[in-house]
Amino acid sequence: MTQLTVAGLATRLEEAQKDFLQDMRGIHPSVFVGVPAADDWTVAQIVGHATEIQTFWVGQVERIARENDPTIGRLTLADKQARSHSTGEGAPHDPQQAAERFKAAGAETLRRLRVFKDSDLSRQGYRPDGTAVSAGQLIEGSIVDHVAEHARRMREMATSSVRRATP
Image (cartoon, rainbow, N blue to C red):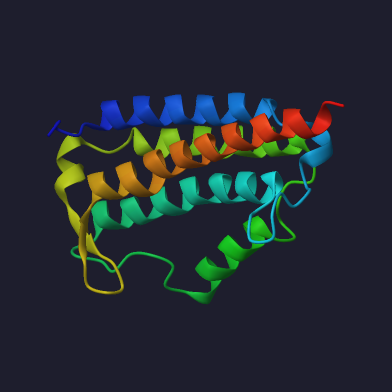
């Protein structure tokens, strides 16, 4: 298993962010807010979510770094409403707005991430169910891999978007 470092996680997040934006550019504008399937999110909802999770989860990592054994996650009504807002009425309305919001959140997240020391990555917090999670695991799973997964989903949607837009 590779040792996690702040620099390594920041590099991986930058790559995931770059992939996400590149894949988002492949989405045909006519399907940006269109529902692809009954139980699927729109592109706008995915972008809203991928934007919001970065700053939310880096905030939770900051709590782990400064508090002893905090409970982390969407614990308050405000936390839960922020997620709902990002995929609802607060979702971006067009690709340009989406890219601007995503870039701003990504830059803020990277700025905040780079403040951590490698030793902070082993500090632990606890999910509401009592499961321990280290700061490094939270950055990797809830930010880096999460953005990368949404980039993959965006790539799939871009492919189907091109097929639908082509006569």
